[in-house]
Image 1 (cartoon, rainbow, N blue to C red):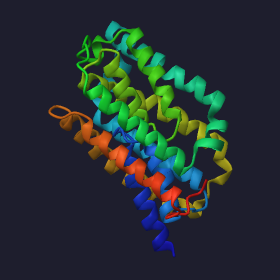
Image 2 (image 1 turned 90 degrees about the vertical axis):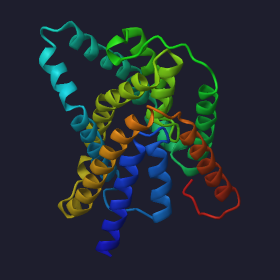
Image 3 (image 1 turned 90 degrees about the horizontal axis):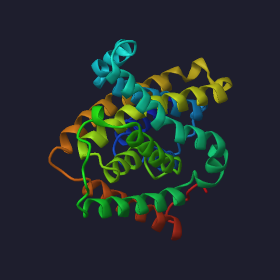
Image 4 (image 1 turned 180 degrees about the horizontal axis):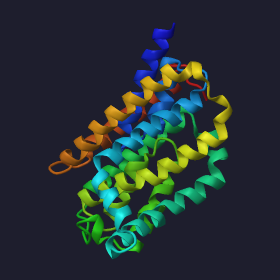
Length: 273
């Protein structure tokens, strides 16, 4: 039984790491996969926090030089202060709206059918954006104004709906607001750090009583799996977007979302609703 639980933790960690930074919704996938494999370990809420932390650390590791440069330059370099300010401004909209609405969202939208609808709608939006010639004004995260950052932050609010995708909302939102593909993707990665870190701290505070030493092996497996898979995802996506559109992710979302909705409608899977 213990090995089965560890195997499920491994699957959940890999799913978190691979989907957190691709525009396909990590929260949506975790909801669906947890239902499919019946992952109901003690402290499951805390487990999600732990694997999310693994994904955060992967971004910090990939961009460690950039974050180190920013922190060291805050006192004397205008570019470092501007970059930090942009991250704060982009973080605030989702933080405020999330704080006010997260209970209602979890109560009504954290289920497979809602995820399916959001996946399909998000995929259609990506296809629409990719088929239009967008005006590009910003070719680097260093060239972003505070208005650009705030607009991307407003787009991130949509990601509070499970199945929408935080990275999808910020990347596609950034492209709509004038960022080129690489700048939008990199800023999405940078913005993930304060956003996910704040969510992690909040979840730890809310669920601290659920921590148990007996869960450490499960947490360790999930954490390591999330870190390694997220590391691969971040590096892979940056390489991928240099010569490809996001259409493949859009079609994946649509097919996966339709399968979820079909399985719910016809009763193929007994989803938790």
